[in-house]
Every structure is written in C-alpha cells, then in structure tokens.
Amino acid sequence: MGRVYNFSAGPAVLPEEVLREAAEEMLDYKGCGMSVMEMSHRSKMFDEIIAGAEQDLRDLMGIPDNYRVLFLQGGASTQFAMIPMNLMKTGKADYVVSGSWSKKAWKEAKIFGDARLIASSEDENFSYVPDVKSLEVSDDADYVYICQNETIYGTVYHELPDTKGKPLVADVSSCFLSEPIDVERYGVIYGGVQKNVGPAGVCIVIIREDLIPEEALPGVPTMLQYKTHADAKSLYNTPPCYGIYICGLVFKWLKAQGGLEAMKKINEEKAQILYDFLDQSALFKATARKEDRSLMNVPFVTGDADLDAKFVAEAKEAGIESIKGHRSVGGMRASIYNAMPREGVEALVAFMKKFEEQNS
Ligand SMILES: *Cc1c(COP(=O)(O)O)cnc(C)c1O
Image (cartoon, rainbow, N blue to C red; front, top):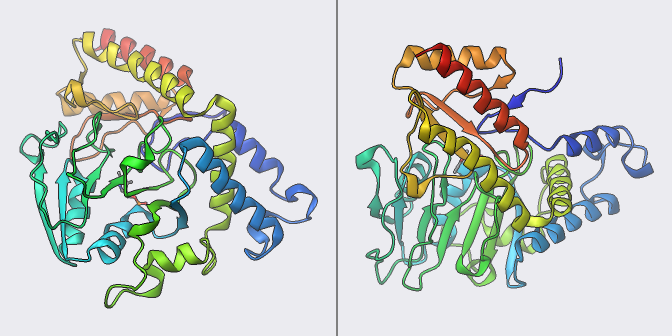
C-alpha cells in the first residue's frame, strides 16, 4: 500500500521529500557512520544541525536579533505553565479564550496569578474569534495571551489584537510557518511542532530577549526557566535531537518551496478548493464563521451523526485518513497543513462530491 492522504490534526503529515531524506540518512548521517539519533548532543555534527535549524527558521520568519529561539520539550502544553511562571511579574495577565487550547492555557495561568478573561467566544461553541479591536486590556497586565489558530474549531485571527502596548503571547502550534508573520508584533510566539513543522517532542519558543527574566520568579524549577535554555542555546540538557533535525529538514524544504509567502499562496489555494465546495454543498456545512476560517484546520458536518460516521469510514477505505472531527465539534475535520499536497485536497473534495450524490 502506498501513502494515504493524512488529514490528521497532529501528529500530522510531513513532506514526503523530508521523510525520504531522513530515511537516506538514517544509518549514516553525512558520512559520520551513525544516525542523528545516536550522536552526542555535544558533538560538532549536532551543533551544526541545531545551529543550522535555528538560522533557517530565522531566515524563514525574519526573526530579529533581539528574539531568542528555543527548542524545548514538554509540548505546547508545558508552555501553558512556563509563560505565567516566567512572564507574570506583577502576577496579572489577560487572556482571550477562543477555543479549548486557549481555555486550557488560561486555566493553567490561574494557578500562578490573576489570569483575567478579557474576551471569549465560548457562547457559540468557539465557532468564531472574539472581537479584539478594542479589548479592555488591564493597565497592569504583564501580557495578553491568544491562541492564534484554534485547531479544534478551525478559527484563526486574521487581525492581531490591539494589546495597548502589552506583550502579545501567541500559541501558533497549528499555524506555525503557514504564512509570513511580523515577529515584532509579538512578545512570545510558540508552538508544538507536531502540527505543521515536525515530529512530536519539540516545542519551539520565540521570545523577545527583554521578556526573559534575569532572576527567576520564586519557586520556578530550573528546567522551566526560559533563561536556562536561552543561556545554554537549548543545550542545557539533552534536547530532542532527532526531532530538531527533522524540523531543520522541514525548514530547508520550506525554503525550497519559496518560503512563507509562497506557502501562504499555496495554502490559500488549497483551503479555497475545500471551502468553495463546502459553501455550495447541500449536504456538508463548514462550522466556523466565514470571516474567521482557518487555512489549516477545516471542521465540517452533515448534521447527522450517523451519516458523519459513514463518511469517515468510507473515506478511510478511499485512502483519506484521520478525517474524523474532534468530539467537541463532531463531524469531520480536514487538517490541510503545509505538507498536504493540493492533490490530497482535490481527492477529498472529489470523494465528498461522490458521497453527497450517493447520500441525498
Ligand atoms: C495540539 C495543540 C496544543 C497542545 O500541544 P501538545 O504539544 O500536545 O502539548 C496546544 N495548542 C494548540 C493550538 C494545539 O493545536
């Protein structure tokens, strides 16, 4: 059997070229006689891998020199705690909750201080992004927090909030490197890489230098201080070496595609194919508000749970994998990340068309 079209929300599809390259280098990385998995993280070979990955990421995103790039472990979920542990100097922060991931982050922050909810879209099952044009940001907030792309509900911020000068902290796990962003508008950008960048086990944090506390706030373990990892260039302890190597290969692949401007165009075209079909379908309906639709995660339903289940089962037979929606929305979700080829989206739409004809 060949490769399927994998619409999983994460861990998710990776570029086939990258997987082939990794396979080729598996036993003998560039003539050093061992796999990247087997080499010391203190070796010159690995130093080139991690430094090269950081440089390529800086090039792709245009990361200014006063931002640090950290390759960490613990997934995006550990950042829900690390952010307040490092940034809540006055003990106060403002949160916008537009889905399950930002809600989790908000709840976690409440362990550490006064995490205030300043906007939410829970009233309509997170099907839209709250209006963030004139947020009531607190004067004493240390930061304003958002989840830029809510993976489960398929919504994205097309405009960043006006934070009234407070640092913006953004979880970009499911839209990482899907289009260019202006790094300087953020204080912290972070994401688990298993959605759009690489294999599970790496979390990338891009943080403005002045936000890294010189002195740790009381009670913060060494491993959970940004300073520890910034000072040691992500090599304080053993980093997730192999995952960082794969991320590095993906960064090179993205550069070869033409960088993030080119990815944005491709991603818009792919998403358009699917949304255009959904908008004229009599059977399927996209669940997110039109203005806030994500380019990466597209949830949709038929409105009939049995028919949804039938769709998911028959899709699998047709080589369309992991299309089942998250239980909190139901129905289906197509995650169409950078590595999903246009042909995959076309195959999905062709299958949906056929299913609609047969079931209405
Ligand atoms: C998947 C996801 C997370 C959680 O990531 P882990 O690495 O599993 O902790 C957090 N935020 C968003 C937006 C996600 O999509």
